[in-house]
Amino acid sequence: LSLQQESISIKLREEFNPIDLVKALNYDGEDITSNVVINGEVNINEKGTYPLEYTIEDNGVVVTKTVNVQVVSNYDYL
Image (tube, rainbow, N blue to C red; front, side):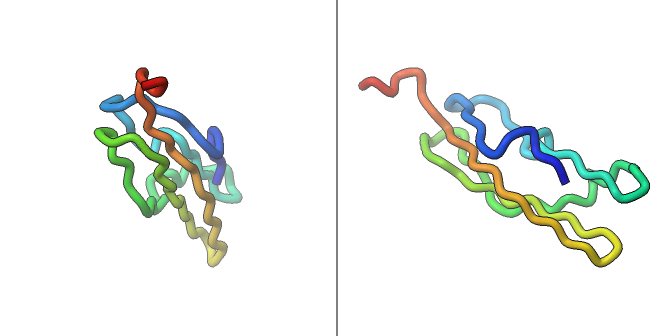
């Protein structure tokens, strides 16, 4: 299970698909990303930090990783 990064910032109301941040391959090198389970959700309409937990299981091996998604505004200085 590989993540593009452990944290990411997106702008308010920006389109966001959490599966785009992860790629999972089994020991044979086959793509099993479609089997990744994502726990948590991101509210793109409200500033804040939202943890997403990604879990994959293959042949009895379970791997879990977390990404923190920060929703920010262009107007943070206000």
